[in-house]
Image (cartoon, rainbow, N blue to C red):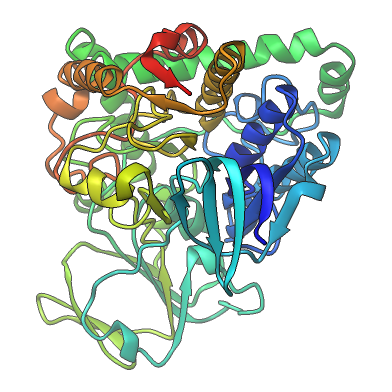
Length: 491
């Protein structure tokens, strides 16, 4: 007989842990949290590449109800995020509900509960299914001729090999996104030669990073209001960037251009060579692709042994890379900073079959990517999809997590007040939400800016920007706490 739970949560990162904490607050104790990795933490467990750090101020990158007064820097290194995840799991008693090395292959609604299949033949059953598989959880391998023939060392940034020594090696990095911005300066310190293959440059602004003094950490611990004030200040800056640079582009084009000039000035100060500077300058609007902060990314390219290659790669052979102009570069090590595959395999990350055999992945791809308030989908009773279209609110992932926790609180309390144990968002509510999001996207940089050359994961395969919620975080939080319960049917 299949094991029966109140809820199965797929994913033991911050999103899954937030959902588990909220369900426990609501009185659900029989939870099962499944994760394919060998420990908790999601992206902060999987990623261990040199230079890994949070790319927004640490004070905003945590649960508001569980602040960490002991961040060592304004932008905390990855190991501290992993440690924070472990702290949360221990404090809120989540470890006992976690199973690692459990690869979920699919889930099916049987009319009254969800049957969740685990690799190896096991099936578990739950009244509620919550998917928290992360936005950036499926590594993207580049589709380049001959890459499988390369005889040297190949490392993807999500599977970093700590035992491999890059010292003196002829290395190549493919990709110049946010991960590469952190990684490339570190590789440049030790590699004998480094060639970086860039398809799309990235907007980079100065990084106001500094060590947090011990006395200030102690003040945060003893006077939580002080850290709350710092968090509010940091969140306000991020919100201003999001609203003026992305969401309300129609009203704030000038602010967007100021952000571009700020990044250009940073590049100009650090790179004097006009040819190199031109290669590193994006030709798309600020906000079309996630920007980042760094003080050492641009200077890395001014080192004599570091080379920036912007000609497209034609093929890879056993010992090197050949670009479209015929230039061949011999390498020992190939580092893939090629990011993640969101829209082909990550929405959803597992096969989910709802009412009447409705396949979520197929439905999203045949229709528009959509989810009511970025949380639920019509035709999928008792499913909460935490990584859905229009769910990412603001620049801190924790804004998204806590919005969804508020939604869960209102939804489950409303369901229980009606004496029900099954919920499903109505088609009407879903359609109205989708229409509203489409209208708001029309005012954003995604519709009005120059985004054609950005190669941004914000856009799905249909060219629609359906990842970010195009509203303020204040609006997202308000709607999560006040959405009409009539938008759901209960049974």
